[in-house]
Length: 564
Image (tube, rainbow, N blue to C red):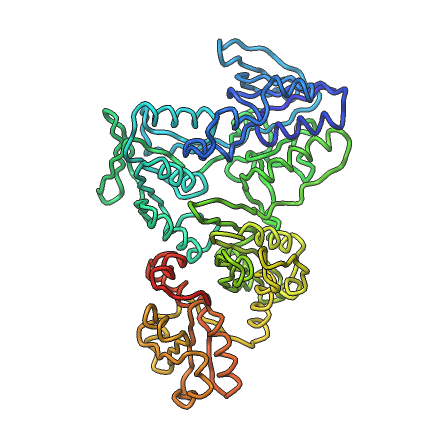
């Protein structure tokens, strides 16, 4: 059996290695248009920032090492230019000299990935880059070494845009980041993305949200972006990071069935509309695991799984791909940001009776040195308590909790299930009630009606309601440092003795710094006949989201307040 694989990065390389482990006699050929195979795509921005210092570290395999270990014929700079399904042939062009030849196959795996979008407003120029391939990375690095740019322009606030902004900043280059939407990182809800906005601004990034670039031109080494309305931003180099699109022109020409945005349609076995052609990676349409709806999820994890599944089925093992929860994580300076499943916005759009719980929890026992707080948002279905997704941002412990919650989403677990998880505990690593357990408890309290909650979006409306009293239960020092306008301050430890100061005819909307003490206050008040509601996330979250304040660790340091 001869298997030809178009594309030699995540999906293609994984498929080749898996197929060899299953079939020692198969003839396997990888055709890769670029000059590198099986490279660390997700590590490219960190080479620009100098975190990864050696170019060779980005290359997980070379054609020679692939041949030695897996006996796979890897042909870099060989571009597949036409697929002939009826003849089971691929027309291949040698990039170096333009000559062509024909390669036959018994089975074909189509894994070309996605291409970086180059929008119509972007002109050409030596200082205007995309960041998708190893060649792109080396070109940016060489340009920085040769030209010593002082300012860079990044257009787009997704994974690549933020990672580029971080690494250019770390290299001493001033960065302006322009984003069309009101937030960066669209898999996150706006309120959680605001933490990232705060961190970017703290690091000196000039963040321009709700800004539409209409023109990007280079002249004499100066890049000029024109923003709708007429404002211009100048820089010494620009990185376009406005997204990717499935690279499927070959598949379309071959008559393969296509879906959303031209992605290749595959069945759960990764088989295309042609029974002898499989596809994997960023070029295919898959199912969102939570909703069951069609989706494009261009992430390395799903691509590797799909490549393995395609190889399994070619080798006679009936493996299936059951969809992706789009779990992801990224580093942004000292912060880690991660998400899985649906954000609240997406869950509501999909028709779920969605709600969320917000927690501000330390990564390990607060009495053990070095504890750092993370913000955790867990989205759930009010109908049955099922966990639909989660997001977290913080300096430590984020990815650990998100991996647990990704498992919970995959297992269709409920809030009650989260409370019952036996998670590892020792003071240097966690708390006896891990933040994941705590999320289950908080959701349980919401579902049972033990606590009503309001969010940062409700504060201004509530503040103007004569039937509402804003109650702040922080200490006086905390209250003086940060409070809602018009809020009455009664510290939680004094509340029982001072309830007579409150009007039972009003709804008491309670807040503290993080939402924990205000929950305790709500339970006291409810037990004494008061109508009350808790501000989810507390004053620290409100200040970041509604007022654009600094991220919590910074604000707490400036205020000199002890950890709660």
